Each structure stands twice: as C-alpha cells, then as structure tokens.
Length: 405
Image (spheres, helix red, strand yellow):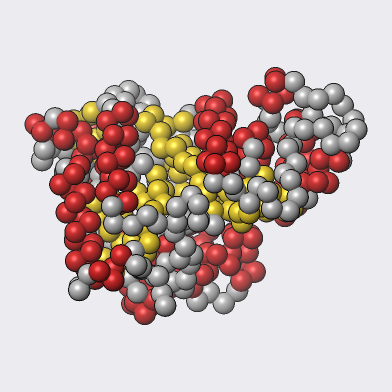
C-alpha cells in the first residue's frame, strides 16, 4: 500500500516571523536582508513578491522594483524559536518527522490518516494547529513519495493544500517548466533547454540517455525516476530512518571558503553525535547546498567502509564540496549519511586520522587521493586510501584544519 507523505513548508517564513514581531509591517512589502550594497534578499513577503522581488535577488535591484520596500534585519533566535514550535506541532500528529531545513519537514502520515474520516481533514487540522501555535501559515503537499510531496507543496501558496498522485503526473507534473523541478539546479536548466527539454515531461520522455548522462552523471537514474513521479517514500525518526542529515540555514549567507569549512565542521560534529546516539554509521555520504537564488545542489558518493566520526564526516564533505563550482553565496548547507548500519555491525569503522598498521597519510595527501578518486567516478575504497601513500607522521591539528585540495 502506498505511503502517505506530507511535505509541510512555512510560507515566507522569515518575513512572516518579522510581521509577528512587528504587526505594523502586516500588508506591506518587506524583505529580510542586511541593508548593505552587496546584500541579497533572504525572504520576501508576498506583498513584495507582487513587484517581482524574490529570494536571492540583489537588494539594490529589489529597491529599484519597489520604492516603498521595507528592509528588515535577520532575527535568528526568533526564527529558531518559531521553527522549534513548528516541528513540535508536526510531532503531535506523527513521530515519523524528518526536518529538511528550519522551515520545512517531511512527515509520514500513513498511520495517522486512518483516524480521519476524510483524508484532507488531517491536513487542515495540522495547518490550523501550526497557525494557532505559531501564528504562521504553511502549505502542505500530500503524495506517495517525498519528491511529489515537495513538488505539491509548492503548487499552492500561501496556505495551500495540494494532493499529487502518481496518476496525476502526466497532467499536472509533466507540463511544468523544467526549471521548476525540485533539485534541478540553475546550471543544469540551460543545458537541458539546449537539448530541447523545456518541461518535466520532456525530461521524463527524453530518448537519449547518453546526452543526459553528460549533465547528471551517476544521479541520472534518480533524476529520471523523479521526473516520472517516483521517489523515496521513507520518512522516520533518527532511530528508524535509512539516512540521517544535518542542515544549517544561514541568517547571513556564506560568502567564502573559510566560512564554509567552519560550518561544515560544526555540522559534522552535530551529525556525528546524533549518529553515535542512534548507533548508526553509513556507507554513503553527501552534501546539500542551496544558493541565494534557491537553486539546490546535491552530491554524494559511496564508501566501501562506513563512517560516523566527526573528522571523517568533515573531511569527506569538504572533499565533495571542493568538486563543485560557483557555490556562493550559500543560504543552506548540509551533510547527509545514508545506507546506515549499526556501529557495532560488521567491521569497526576506520577513522581517517587513525594509524593503520605502520602507514598513516597526512590529511592533505588523503584528501588529494580522495579527490582524485571522486573525479574518476565517485566511488572510494576507503581502506585502499588509508593504506595508500607515503608513510608519514600523524597529522597535526593544523593539518586537520587545512584539509583543502
């Protein structure tokens, strides 16, 4: 039986939170951003969007579009408070909740929905409770898998409820412009259009996979599955989920490599603690990057030995990050681990910085080897990497801090 997956998304979150903080802003065109010459819009109210203003737009451009635009500085602690309340509401309906970022989450309602005579009553009840508890509106997408649920939640805003079934894919998903497909980045869109792929349906039915392989590489099968309405339907708590992620949404977008390293290191430590507490380590690791224009990049690789320790998560995530171009400014960044097994299952994890017999590579040499293997196809034999290379002293703390290709 198909799962019932909800994607719940707070509408214009930062801007809406600012209106709650200052009711005088209600009904006015506002953007949340640092009021500086190089700033970009973090969130625009729906009133501001009527002027063509959107997230990721340079603030100077937004001001030209609307002479009455009100610029409000970020209040990160306020957003975190509302986010915690939002997630707590969802947990009242189901324990199977997976936060995606500060203002959105997936929830498996397959069991919960059985308690409602009319399925839409559940979505309305959830929407109303979010409003009553936080004062914020949300949109909900309902579908048999995560991808369709995410697409559905974007179809009607603000405060929309949209059901997207598999049978609706040809009529409702395929006509959408290819640029509206979730997880199709701004770099991929013009390449697809150059092939004559203008809609999601064009992609789903494109006859030449070799052309598409040049764009998507090893992720092609996943992309095509999504375009045809298929996808992962698993959502769960840390104890049951098949993957585990830790993401960070920036109050002020990351602008340089040093900031990225610091954030990835912080995320890696948080994720490592959660993995340890859940008795999980994983064979697959990846990163998610969301730019200020809301284009999203997701890249992952598979390992032959599972990992969970913070140093290893950080090094691998940074190595994957180094393979991408034109990241900045970065609105959201995260690390995810999948293909999870028990830490006590099978071979004990090899730490990338632990000595292995008499051979220990420095962090810089290790990352260089990892990056070389990434370029060759994205599969890493971690044991071979550890045993390959020159015998050198154990890396210092400075070596660990400077893991960059």
